[in-house]
Length: 451
Ligand SMILES: Cc1ncc(COP(=O)(O)O)c(C=O)c1O
Image: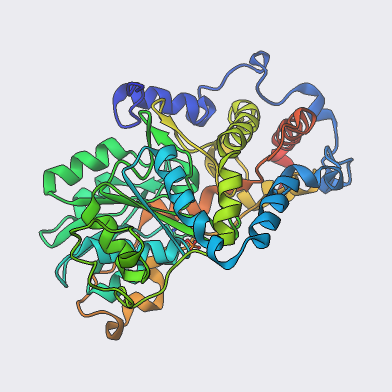
């Protein structure tokens, strides 16, 4: 286990933050000789947005960004599964559960139809009295939150830390009340939440910790995989995710009671198939389970099993490409990346998120994005939902108990106003890495010309 060396909230952590967020963001930026910014050559060129030659020929590199990547080995295992008889189709489900337990070092795992049904089953397993409150991030996909309503549970919206885009435990302390019984950190874009701080906070208030790991397959903190810090956790295997099965979900559980409850809600075969303990109180529900059918498609499990063999290698490739790019471009004035502590091993989902500080860069996000796109950089800008603004939470007919909606969550707003998502490189691409760095340096060298 690695020791925590870089707490972003401690003074030493602050030092690391300045380093990893780009010292330039603080006005301390390195001299150009350090290989960092605004090389003279970049200055003499004309920006592509102003009619100059783009740095990157985009069409040449489409394969680098392709996701998911299914090849011959996936086709072979799927064909073999289709050639099996009806009785063998479902074998892939317990096989995947066993592999997921082993990979994450967790005692119980259950496959579900998708991440959303894994969440529904997790909140059923939580088994809290109606009216209990559950802390959730507003910055997430809707299904982290919405299924609370089926169990009479009430969301308490928590902000994100703008330095990480993950759960802000300091804000959670401010909105804590005696009805809160559980907390749901979500590991945004593959960066683990500060699980040590969150677990300390949960312990102080006797709260259950439930992790939404839909973005973070293979990420860990202090050597412990995400999903295993809390009482329960969920993963999504939807097509865009780091471990893509097109659709699919998984729940992980530290104790048998939670695993069995989460199973019996949507797996009517479980009482007869040996998935429950001999003395399980749920064995009597043969033929019905507890009313839903949330089983994963077995061909998705075949696909996920094959992709799982490549997960660590794939995460490593993406990480190394991001590091090569960010170690250079995050030296540019006003450009930084989410703070990752030294005791966190993050993965990347969806994009390489960068933060643009307009005041320090002296240029707007829109102008920079337009200029980078013209240079051939593949990137996007979009706002991730602030869920508390959705209609469903303001209409009492969907909830048995009132919800206290925040007026504003400044961390969410800051991240949404600053984020730029550069496409992830899914293959080693040294030449393209250099071109991306060059494109950023060129745009920065000319940024005063941009409006
Ligand atoms: C944070 C988060 N939680 C849960 C889910 C739900 O997963 P699924 O799409 O597999 O239902 C998603 C899906 O994108 C997600 O991003």
